[in-house]
Image (cartoon, rainbow, N blue to C red; front, side, top):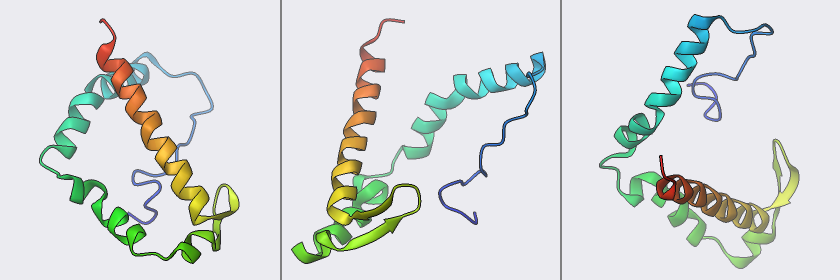
Length: 105
């Protein structure tokens, strides 16, 4: 993996309509996604999933959180901003998962 943001490469649109076979492959990938995610994270504790990041952030000083840094997509931000945004992002995904779990199929 050369770029951790894109472990399977960047998305590249075909620039044309999908064939029936390509569409079916995409549908199969989406259908298998929930079980593949479960299998990938099964057995990983919180420490493996996000603990190193949390441990690192907890070692920073209050001044560190105010220091400017450059996010490749957002631009100039502080660690405080990123921490707040990623906390929201985590809750955002949790709400999606909770809604999916509560939905009747």
